[in-house]
Image 1: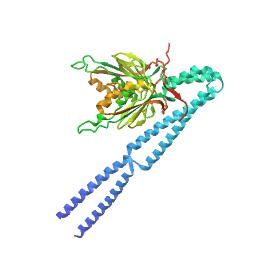
Image 2: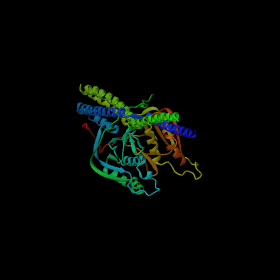
Image 3: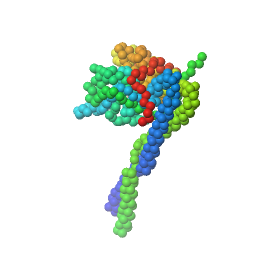
Image 4: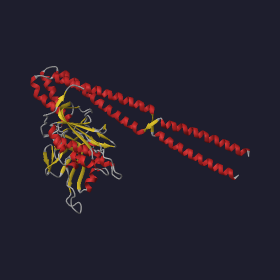
Length: 235
Length: 232
């Protein structure tokens, strides 16, 4: 009789364990998504991207047609203004002399106890390099092919960096800037300057290249103001 | 004795069944993907749909302008002027109004026992502006200087320059956007405001129903860059 009790105890214990594991796995399943659904989602994203690219090409095409349609002589001055605004707003791709700055995480071998976080590129580092370039007269800027606007943020998100709200970029980060190459290079390479600090202290890999011709793509997103509207002074 | 065997047979049967069931569920788990990955794709899909709607409207608008510009000189001039006005809003040459926040930054004189440890640095302002951009700020200014794509916020000598103009403390950053989102992006625990306060810098964030941000005054200097027309 005692052996029976013992057996029942053992079996019940085992049963309980099984039920618990089963329950946990079931909860996990609820938090995951079947592969088929993901496949469909991926296909949809791919199609939407293709459609976006097609529309973007169409917009660029229409812009150059409009440019050609307004080629009359008297409009030169107006069109120069429009061109400046379009460059600032990132509506057109731009090209000119400039530089390319490539930044990558440190390749210093870490000693035990050192904080690896210090030897990795941060959004702040990129912000500072960009700010330095702007101060040195950069006219048009992009990171990894993402055109930078007045509202473009640079945000660390795990190992990647977010730019222009939804664009995820991974290291190495390539900043392209159109402007006077020599001014920009000397601003970056200044003793005690941004690049100096990044290289000396943290071993961040920085390489700067002077380019006679660099092309920066147009802004790939859409423009929409949900909150701001033009302010007309009321008298 | 016989009853005991029966019980054991029965229990073994149940356990066996359970184990098989268990095994099959585990298999099923392997065929699914983490929720995060799918979520990321869904977010991208939504962003793409929004972009598409914007682009479609732009195509329509440009088509209308194109057909109008082809009608004659006067129409072409008018079309260019409309384009300038609309593009000017995006380029920052129009004053803007909307809900948002006002951020006042100043060093505290007697904040810490040893006085101010750090004054306000260019980097602090840069970080605040970046944080506001992350939270979706649509229009920004620092001490009345409209922030455009090439605006620097940089220490030059004793003062901070923005758009090559010298600004002096206290620093006032204005942003138009969702006031609550803008404010919480700065005031989040461990965020910029908390860090700066620990350093003895006073940061005051105020949400406003109506923020007016001036236009960019300076000229656009494009000595090196020129537009590329050909679609890629």
